[in-house]
Amino acid sequence: AQSVTQLDSQVPVFEEAPVELRCNYSSSVSVYLFWYVQYPNQGLQLLLKYLSGSTLVKGINGFEAEFNKSQTSFHLRKPSVHISDTAEYFCAVYQGGKLIFGQGTELSVKP
Amino acid sequence: SAVISQKPSRDICQRGTSLTIQCQVDSQVTMMFWYRQQPGQSLTLIATANQGSEATYESGFVIDKFPISRPNLTFSTLTVSNMSPEDSSIYLCSVTDRDRLYGYTFGSGTRLTVV
Image (cartoon, rainbow over all chains, first blue to last red; front, top):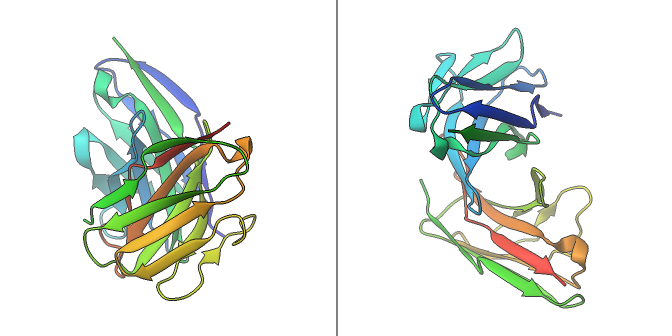
């Protein structure tokens, strides 16, 4: 069975600094990976997804992620964060028609 | 991608009662799911709602506690039965379509507090 591990439960960062949120998945022949964001008191919004092709995936709000098969990782990055990026971020893997989520990373952007 | 309307957005319920949550999609979708997000936790899949047949439940979830209906390709309900404070969570509906290329769309969730 697929699983996802988000290595950091909380990431504090100053505004305009770069950020990386780490995600590792269990190895599989083929894998579909997703990053979602959950703003306070809201549902989940898809940031980006990797299905196949280019290992560098660009998403909304300036986020991107790189699929690394050898390291079984799918880390999310943004070169310069804003206060409005403060939210919970979830990495997820597709398995048997369902999404399996990591534990989430709380990104806190401070002025 | 599909647009989901989930109702109610929040509720406070007495223990021992039941609450039914509705999920309405603006287009026909193949797959509908119900998730639970306990306070400060990640999302856990409760079940897959199957159109015209019984839902498929994940380990740890049973039909008597979380009965699900899906009468057509655009609508589903989740009932949280005989509630206790431990059921206080956010419940989210999610949909995807056959090719899954647009990813999985989520409703805004129902924030349930059981007192």
